[in-house]
Image 1 (cartoon, rainbow, N blue to C red):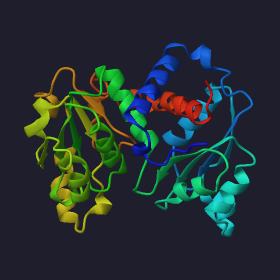
Image 2 (image 1 turned 180 degrees about the vertical axis):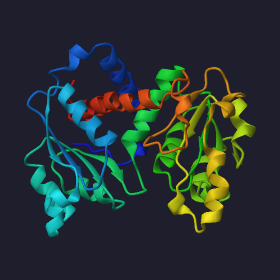
Image 3 (image 1 turned 180 degrees about the horizontal axis):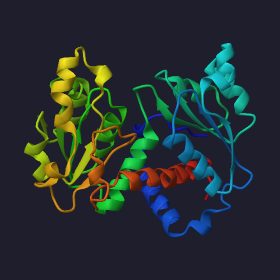
Image 4 (image 1 turned 90 degrees about the vertical axis):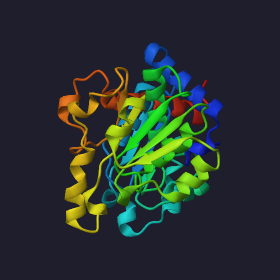
Length: 304
């Protein structure tokens, strides 16, 4: 029995295999409609989620399985003080696989140590979100036809963005990848991520506050939200917030085949005027999340 808590638990070969299965599901959906018949997925969501929870549920339904669970801590026995360990011990008797989102970092890891079925980390605080990273990798692979020899720009909140840290770690394992890190000084990529992932492997990267300066080089632009609540004073936020709003004007120097990604939800950091641009991939990206989660469920349930 195997769980998935951290994207780095998967080898590059396993990631490539998951992407291949997801692509086959997209091409031949009818072949997968009964793969998880009589199997049950429990969605234990201790904090709010739209895309992640619904895409897990849609994934299991489209594999012919069933779903049970809860969408907020208040509707579970956690509201009475039950521990995560006890919850998953019980739920393991009701379901074949568990997807868990929790506000506390490390909670899904604890769950995996007490469950008797596979546990998938569907996001734990600001820590890890491996299925979002798999979604991002499938999107890049489908849009670009490869995961190597790409220049990827990350823009916005690089300090607190769990999706950014995970995707950098995943992309760093493919050859020929270069990174552009675009953020306010206050929200730059943590030094430990740079040291452990980029500098330790000698990977090329640039760090800047100016998106325009790197735009012409980018194959992929991964946008995130600059969050008002992360600033110590309102003046700094007001000074910086508009410099990271992606508008059609900012794309004038971009490649014709740039791919624009965003983990969503979007607030105002990508102008809605860009939604009709063929380079905007973020709604396709959300759809691809369903297919990669289908592939992951099959892998962890050891369904051929």
